[in-house]
Image (cartoon, rainbow, N blue to C red; front, side, top):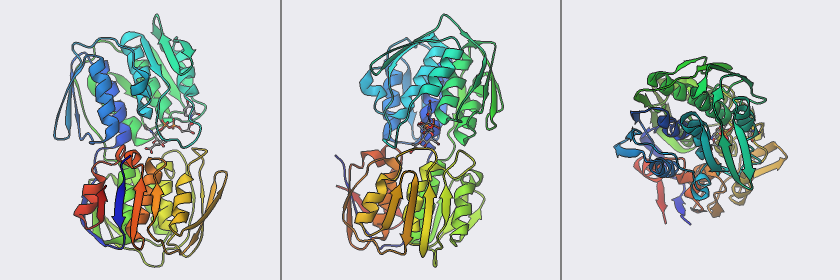
Length: 415
Ligand code: EPU
């Protein structure tokens, strides 16, 4: 089990460069198998989820090489292979091989995906959509066998605007005959990023970023090139770090529109910052005000930032409330924040945070990726030393988090 040690109370100053978005990159790599040629993905973050996706690509006989943050994928000798449970369970995004392999081979054998334990995370919408495209689904325990004689374009209405289902169905629809329309599609930037890659390969896709997406089934896709969008969740995490303990901390390489919901809440909480093209400069905020937040699908307030924002709200004078509407168990981190001195309590999907509380370093546990990040933020402002256990979760999603924070003055190390 890897651990992080943080000595709190140091000001963060200098620049933090935002890496490519985990949640885009993890879908772009499986999407590359749709091309019969070489693909190039720029700005790929070095995080452990990517390592496992590469292992799956190699199992499918694809050749991968990485130079700096550019990944070259040669799919010219691709061969079908089932995905072993050990790999599919390493991350949530392994499920993108369902859609991608259905489009490529009309078959996929894969186990239920892994990922953070933040509630019940079924994949029924993915499977319902595949069925509408003509896929037969056999489930034995954890393992799914998906087969189709052919995939036929159709209209799919998603009961919920799921990011994963939208991307998975877009991928499968590429291998379908005719046109597929996805209604009530997710609108997150990741969807636009994946669509731009597919369009670059030669697929006709309209409406990515809106709630109706149409995909025209295509064959013989050529090489594709795409740049991974900057990670909006990583950006928000470091912006919050700046609001907690920054001194002209510059977060660079962001797309501001992607984090507007978070910036608006910061303004409402009386946190000021300066924006300039792709940069935000932020210093420790004074007189933070309590706010109410409801997590929503994009462009609403992202669930993935809620836990880090909680740490900020421990420093707001008064009571703040967070209503989590996307997941049913995403407040576990608050139990550890409370151990550090925070005053929070939750009931179901509603969390209340009472501030201002002084935080003190102690030993805590990263239950999940963003919850772990919320503890890192707490450690940065806590009195004394914080030890975070089980930090593999954090490293799954934040490229070089230790180095990036050390570079701007944090006393943080892996132990
Ligand atoms: N849902 C269903 N059935 C489905 C699919 C989803 O009920 O078939 C429910 C989920 O259980 C959840 C909600 O819908 O309650 C949202 O799920 P969604 O499918 O939108 O999320 P996801 O694809 O599983 C991705 C990110 C998450 C991020 C969400 C929402 C990846 C690999 N993961 O998950 O990222 O929270 O979208 O934006 O892209 C993270 O980065 O920390 C993280 C958890």
